[in-house]
Image (cartoon, rainbow, N blue to C red; front, side, top):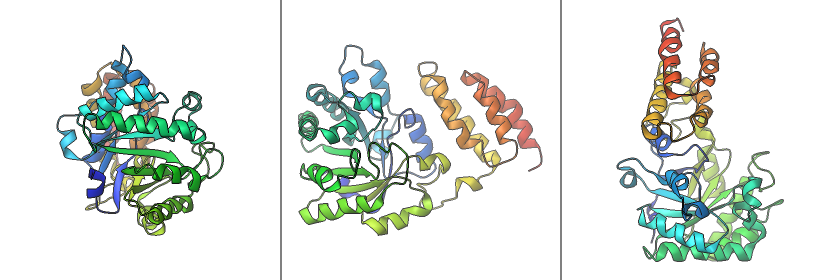
Length: 332
C-alpha cells in the first residue's frame, strides 16, 4: 500500500508546472495553505541519466525538511525505457514519496520525441516505459508509489480505451487532465470524461486513486468532487490567482489580500529565489510570477512595469524598496 491510499478524500494536490514548482514556490504555497501532495517540475529522464545531469537534478532539489513535511512526488518524462528505469531508481533513492510518469504534456517539442502526450498514440510504448519506471523504482524500494498524469486523448476523447488501459496497469494513482493533447490549454476541461474514468475504475474494482485536473478554482472544488467522485483534485494555474487556495482552515481569497501583504509576499519570493538559486537559474523565469502579486490595487501596474524591466534580484528588490514603499505610504 502506497501513501496514496492513506489520503482521505477529497485530497488536494499542487500540480507539476514547468519553471514554476521549484522548491521555492512549493514552500511559499505550503506556508499559506498546505496541499496534501506536491509535485516537482517535470524532469527529463534522458538528462537525469546523462553525463552532465546537473540541469536536470536541480529540478529535484528540495528544501530542508520538505520530504518529511508532506508527500512530494517527483515527475519524470521520456520515451526510453532504459533511462526511465535509471531515473526512477534515482527518484526512489532520493527519498521522494513517489514517482509520476508524465503522459500528458502537449508541448510539440516534447511530443515529437515520442514522449509525454505522444504516448497516447503509442500504447505499446507507453506500457513498456511504464513498466521500466515501476521496475526501476521497485529495484530500490519494493512497492514504491508509481503514478501517471495524462489527458483524455490525443485529438479526441479516448477515455475508455486510453485511461482504461492505464487503469489495467494497477497504478497507485492516475491524474486526468480533462482536455485532449491537441487542445493544449484551450477550451474548457471536460469533467464528464474525468467522471467516466472514476466509473471505469469502480467497474474494474481497482484501488487506483483518481485525481481530476483542469480549470479548478476554490469555488469549483466542492462541485467537481461531488460531480465526479474523484479521490483528489489537482490545482495548477489556479494557484497563480489564489495563492491560498489550499488553505482549508482560514481561506481568504487572494484578491482580497491587502497590497501590503501582496508586496511583502513578492519580496519574500524574490529573496527566497535569490537565496536558493543565486545566478544559477534564469532570473527571467521569475518574472512570470510578478503579475500574481501586482494586480487588483492602485499602483500595481506601474510597479509591475518597472519590475519587468529588471534583470537581477537586487534590481527588483530595489524597485520594491523605492516605488513599493511609495505605494504603501500612499492612500488606498
